[in-house]
Amino acid sequence: MVCSVPIMSPRETKAQSMARPPNNTKPKALILAILAGVITCSMARVTLAQDPIRVGTNQVVIPLFVTDKERDRLLRKDPSSLWRAIKEGNIQLQDDILESTMIRGLTAGDFQVFEDGKEQAIQSITYEPTVYYDFHDNRGYHSEYIGEGGGKWTSREWPPWLVGDGSPPHYLIAYARPDSPEGSCHQITVKVNRRNAVVGARSEYCNIRHPASDPLNGTEFGKQIESNLASPKHAKVDISLLAMAFYTDSNEARVHIALDWPWKSLKSNSKMVGVLGIAFKKDGSPATRFSDVCQLNYMCQHNSTHENSTGPHWDQILTRYETQVNLPPGEYDLRVVLSDGTRFGRAETPLVIESHDRKELAVSAVSLCKQIQDASAYSQNHAPKLPGSWTAKPPGDYVPLVSEDIEYKPTANTRFKKGEALYTYFQVYEPSLAGATPTRVKIQFRVFDLKTGELKSDSEPVSAERYVRAGNPVIPIGLGVDISKLSKGSYRLEVQATDSAGQSTLWKTANFTVE
Image 1 (cartoon, rainbow, N blue to C red):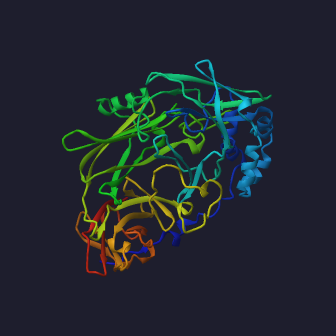
Image 2 (cartoon, rainbow, N blue to C red):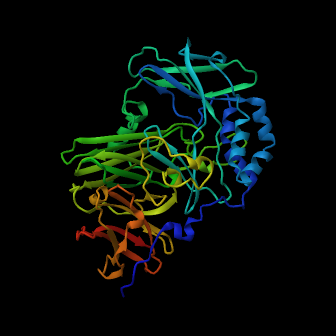
Image 3 (cartoon, rainbow, N blue to C red):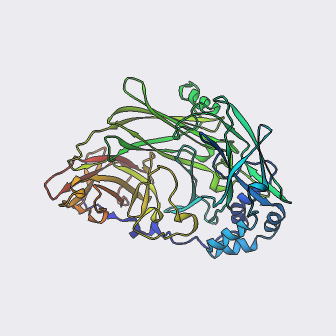
């Protein structure tokens, strides 16, 4: 039997009820997550949820918190005001309460900075908000963090009663970088002349030159992960790997890379979690490499615990990593390693980047997704719909896969349970959209049974007009596909684009399984 394929905009489905946190919250557990940044500031020596010490040609820049010990103690003793702010969804009040534990108004004269025991002259100091990202997706809530290499680390979904995260502002102190041999590491100590002040800052930096997208290159941890790539040892972390190419304005494609892994497979209380990937050409030579790391801090410390906490903080349990690299057309072998310093996982996948004539209609690779989330904060055409940390675009060059203000997250795990939502994201390239006489584009879907070859569903051509951005030849299309009527088995989703000028693309495919 052949039937039409229901094609749904995620904003039209119940899965997209992303307006507010649930009300069935448990105060104690929630407060522990909210106060994580404050609690860590009270410890003697900690590394906080901040960027690493940045080393430029002329400067060393140190992010740090300065907390009032007594105010911090009082807030932890009676966090009822913070709890009410979270329960009411008052993000501004939440931020004000967290910031009340900080010591504000400090100047360069209030600090002393020492590198390897020698005091340094402070050149500048600023007080800035701390960037953090909490997202409400079709499955619940989770946290995301931009890594030192510019990729995006994602936590597992929080329990339904955990709906908040927060972090107070911080100082940035800069001083002139002393000359030192490349590869040398240096100890940093920061003191402040305020009573009851507790300083939280990273304590070391290394003078290592590497591309911004490859921060592990040349480091000891990076060398360890490189050895994992060639190691004959059995990998203990089961990772799924996906790589797919999308169009750009140049001859190179932007390759979106995603890794997923079971959160329990990483070591509890890992000091850092790192990833290394290398794309090899057909002759075995490396075409490009990338790396990234979540250092020891309360956001990226995997499955961490804190003072007065009886269990892990769910916003720190990492389960996913995404990044992007640019590559020219060709055939590659992509190999990736994920490691927590003790355990590691390896994955490998062939990557074929097809060349395309930018004068012709084309369709990118077709991705399958299980998770989608509100990305209205990334849109220039719509006001943000979610409060607090949702209102800012993550920094760096990472380009979210966004269609109609919804971000789509491609998955390598294409096994879908009966009743589970399946989403697809792909891009149509129509060069005439950048000209004075744009053509109209339509898209069509069909699903085949892989075992029998039977056509299970077929759609009529659907207009892509709603996805078109004026003057942009790339049409980002994200949809929900109804698979509720499919029985258990393996299937192939096919996508084709046509335009009013008579052009048609080849059918692009993606396989999936219904369990």
